[in-house]
Image (cartoon, rainbow, N blue to C red; front, top):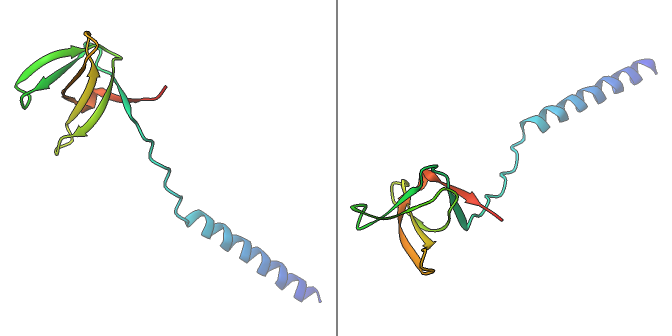
Length: 105
C-alpha cells in the first residue's frame, strides 16, 4: 500500500510540474490595440505643417496642440492632419509623424 501511495504522489507531482510547464509556454493573448483619434504635438519648438508635397510650410503648430490624423504616407514618416486654425476654420496639411503622440481626454 505504501508503494501505491508513493507512486500516486510521484505521479501527482509529475502531473503538476507538467501543467506548470505547459502554462509557462502558452502564448499570451495579444492586447487590443489602442484606438487614437486625436494626437498632440510633442516637439517643444512647434511642428511645421507642409503642403504641396512638402515644398511649402503653411504654419507652425505649438507644443501640445491637438490634431486629427487622416492618413499616413507610404513610408510612414508623414501624417496627413486636420487642425483648428486661429481663425476657427479647419486646416489641413502634412507633418512629421514622429512628433505626434496619442491624446485621449
